[in-house]
Amino acid sequence: MPRGDRTGPGGQGPMTGRGMGYCTGFNQPGFTAGGRGGRGWRNMYYATGLPGWARTGYTQPPASPPPPYRYNQEQEKEDLKNEAEMLKQHLDNINRRLEQLEKEE
Image (cartoon, rainbow, N blue to C red; front, side):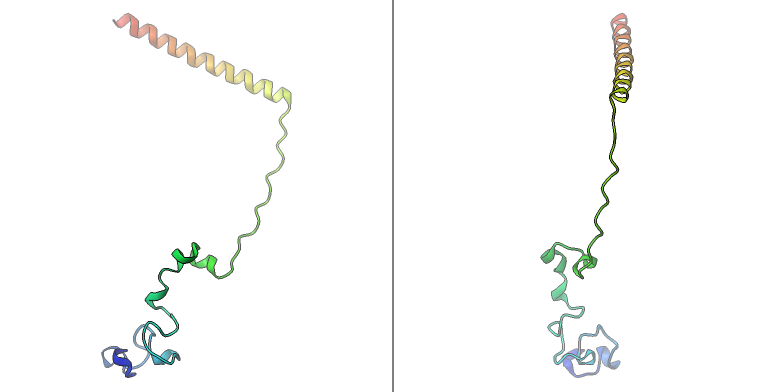
């Protein structure tokens, strides 16, 4: 509302602009009128460190604890055997490639 004269932007009448004037019920026009949509509130995220949905008192539900994982000795033995076999295969592949490179020289 230019100059607070209740004519709206471009003389188009009340409630045709950003809602920053007397038509919204504030006792003064402009960005100081209660902060509704005003530029003075743009740093709210930086001031609070919270996004908009979290500033209104929303809290996330507590996370449920994961189910207990039982790992017995037999499973551990099997896993270690599998890992040892995998490492042997990797070492065999590395040695095979080294032999190829030495033959090429």
